[in-house]
Length: 411
Image (cartoon, rainbow, N blue to C red; front, side):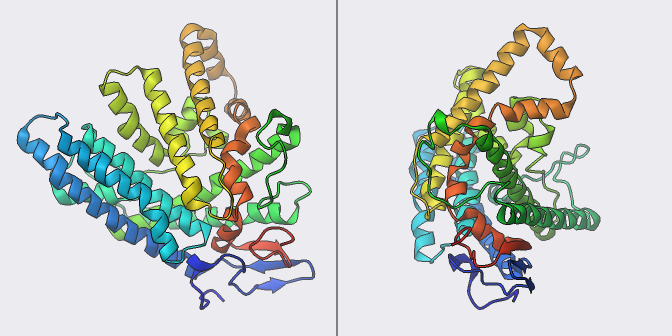
């Protein structure tokens, strides 16, 4: 059934769908429309809470600053941002989700990631004077609560209106990515001798160099690809919902990072999760630079902030796995090293820039991801060893071996 009696947010162990088709070894499922409807409702409600938070910041931080006619940060501003808004989003999601009985990890990931993370970084944007230009409380609250960035029309400088044609194209894009994600996860389910498994106990030496083998590097690639298509499918679906409800075009979140990046800085700065990149740039990097920090210090601060909120997500979004703190932050610190090294080498040796222009982009992309793949499992840890992908399979049309349920292969 596409509309079962059980609410998807509470699903932990059993697939609530009836197979469309079954064989001796495999079950074929269609995606759960009930799942998508509930998750859309959750995103809308959280966006409304985010907009309310933005309205409060506008009324008590931005508007008084306009009336004072100087941009200086006051102690009251700091109390609102660091004493009220950020602690609220850090400490409230987990107990609220527990009280509401939210056990499905896709729901926990969405509820604990999108609006809370955006709200925290948008609050620091407002504090340090990098909030988007708004002439009213309503427009700022809309931008603050929006789960995606709204496109600006290059001609008028206003928010770009979405046509019915562009909204329809976004719906088709999201549908394509949903089916592509389902196809990839089906391959991981059905051909686990060739592809990586997930939701299994952490093996011995998982965090040591002994665990870095050619098979592990290959597994990291396929699992990283799965995370990428998950994010792309969900963000395209969210973009369609945003365009449909608001009438405005949204900026893309994922720009083919694994296969289109020519350097580490392009991967993180212009292709992987552009939404979070914008928040980190406006809410961490620019404030550090405005306080006198160098470019390198600003980059370090942005990646440390990214690592810190990913560490926080371990407690909020992944209750089915015992969190191990530190490896995720280490992964992001390694990205700082790569980005700074790239910029230093490019500045000192022009041959590097020449080679980057001459070499085929697919080869450059391969070299870029090879710099991260050996330790990619440090970032992927919670996704691999939790029920994230099993719970996410409810979003997808999928082929699963008979008897596996949502608890992993052979569960």
